[in-house]
Image (cartoon, rainbow, N blue to C red; front, side, top):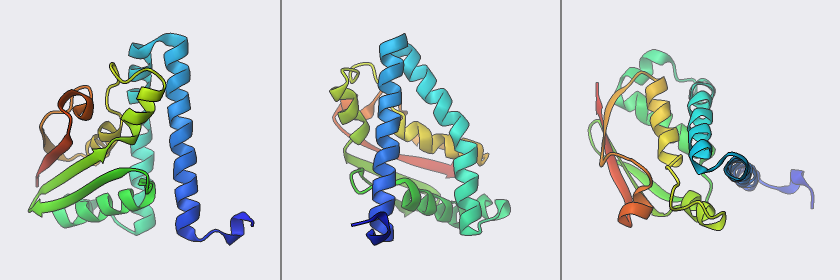
Length: 169
């Protein structure tokens, strides 16, 4: 078997798993070297600096222009494209648009929290998964409100990672 024998979905899944493993190992090394507070801070800084590149690359690849993102339908196209690009099958979450200008997410099992448990950092971990998505919205200059507010880790702190984002267009 060669890489060429993998279909597109298999190759994407492999690349997403490798990227997320790199991300987790990077976080672990930061935690080991500098402590959990610095690891959380550096993780968020890395995510925030990635967002402009990531969201604009995907929007460009999809042929979505800035003005189109200024509508909820345009935003949905970007969100759908982002998740089709970066979401692996092992990432057990869903998202939907239950009403105009509302995104709802639900995560049954958090791959990031499971990884944090493996490295002994789950009690102090600050969610990077949702922060990444919110950084996309910030980069796009969107006005939005998250319910409930995400502080720390919803899954760890409440037993459920479910919420909505209300956009103002």
